[in-house]
Image (cartoon, rainbow, N blue to C red; front, side, top):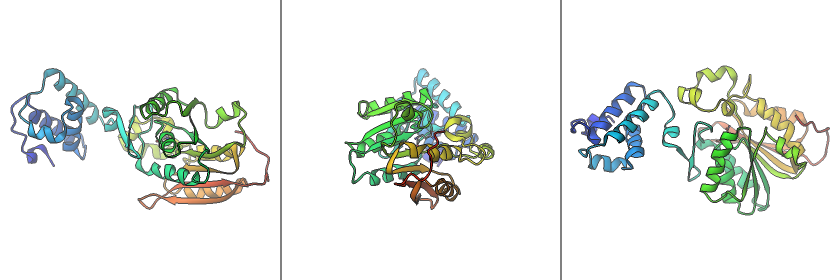
Length: 309
Ligand code: GLN
């Protein structure tokens, strides 16, 4: 719906209605689909006035300072910066997580990882759960909240991402319960000598194949962290490394849960099978019918020498 259809295009100059109409037009010209909605959300961010009240108070004047802030946000959005980075938040599993350009914006399908982690820990409430590549901390926080007796460790290679994760953990009251550690995949566990102790390793690794990176929409390609997206030539580099590392740190019958991209589940399962370290595997579909999460349970017998990569 455009602002003309909303009947606010004729509001006086400098009013909420006029600022909205101008923002909507700029966003529409830039190719933003939900231009009217996004204009209202950006203005809400600046004025702290809800979209509904913006309609009610359409004739109210906007100060020069607020107008300048709005113009800056509209220009950034027109340049295809994700709305979530501009607003600073994204909802995930019923919580508003803080996000900055240092972290991947949480996606709804990743809630499958949370549900499955919780399900696997039902019989083991004091489980040790490790979230690899925690980003905003959305998985670690959602798991910790559902499993009050679990020990949760959140790892990320990026210090900037960990600062966002830590802020989210504190915001939701998990600052003391979730441990944040900087490091490459499971390397922090190696440094502490914590082998064969983890119940669940959960990860949403980067899984975009190198050649596909250019086909992503500009919001993702130009603004979300490369480290959180790029998964090597076929998008499965990090899955392979986790398949190799996880058996070292999982208890026997511990579980590795990983999100995968379109068409990757079968290949990742085949690699897991080849490794000889996992006794069962499971694939979970998301709401779009895409195989989205793979689950591997570590075998009991040590059939192969462990390689730490
Ligand atoms: N764990 C975070 C998420 O699922 C970040 C994942 C990533 O950066 N690849 O959103």
